[in-house]
Image (tube, rainbow, N blue to C red; front, side, top):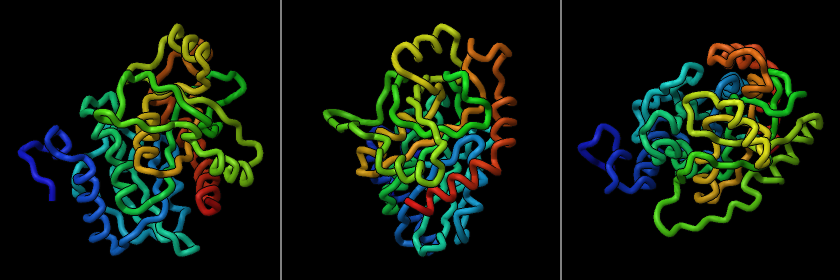
Length: 278
């Protein structure tokens, strides 16, 4: 097991983050009895109920008991790692313990969920989030497929001379499967800001000008790490509000949570059906 005097092993730059991911995967395998997971999901605001529809829960482990993870700092995240046996016999790892970039723990901690998923054997990574919409016809509660992203964090999970091709990062194959389940699904480019403050109207205009359709504070860094690990990525945003300047009322996290809660039954069913078809 990776050891360090730091509270979290990933805080020590001398520790190999992939070794910590392997340690985490070993704990998950031991606690769940499942040696190999086929697919992994990180469930953001509004998406948590999908875990209940995927299949039979085999085990649910508090994130604090798994190397490299910590309790979720955001209301709306479960803070657990759940192993689910799907009806077709495959196993899904459902991650409800996302570390956001704005928490200040470093990029290694942000992408540890993805690297752990890869270490469990998962070849598909489903990343979901609650986000602001720039297109005015997207009403709160609208699920949108992520077709690409713009990373405005000025950071990367890749260390050193590590060059990773991000062509087709959000796999066209997986998006096509999702559209077979729901042909009405729209697509958009996700723009990750650093947060935790919501974007200004000028920043939203900038995002739209450079090609963004969705604004949020997660996902892009995780997607890069998933590609580095050789995983296919499927991304979903739940539009919880229109972005600043497009929505005239002030933005609030309470609004985000409420929009997610209101949309839960519909998007949970959608996501479960999509995952079953992947």
